[in-house]
Image (cartoon, rainbow, N blue to C red; front, top):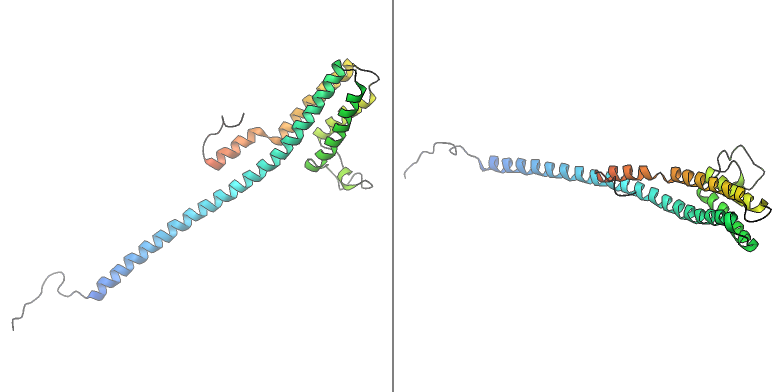
Length: 195
């Protein structure tokens, strides 16, 4: 029997060490993968939350925009009627539409300080109206109180109502902030997206 002496790196090599080393490498790789996957999932969860918040804001904006668009149509009809019209029936139709829009607007723009003022009224009517609703009420009252058509003074007052209404709704819709929200959501510049 020939005895060959093993020398070198593998002379005293134990296969259990090799297996332990591989197990250690697999554990480290598994930890790295799990850490990376967890980090990616956290970023996705954060993005999903931001997206849900943005979508909720957009839903509210869309409801307000729909109501405001219909309201602006009626304010414009009232303005044109006061400038050029003579039709008493059209005035009544516009007034009917305005009073409906005022009530619908209360659902979107609840009154301020409702805890302190008007406690003897129904809940939607306690407190103080928000600006856009005030403008619709002024338009309704203008139409209700004008003695004859056309009426340039009433038309001038309605034009002021339209401008105040438009500005107040724009503040509520906050279109400039929509771009900032999109930038935050996407991480990019969306200045041209919504104009």
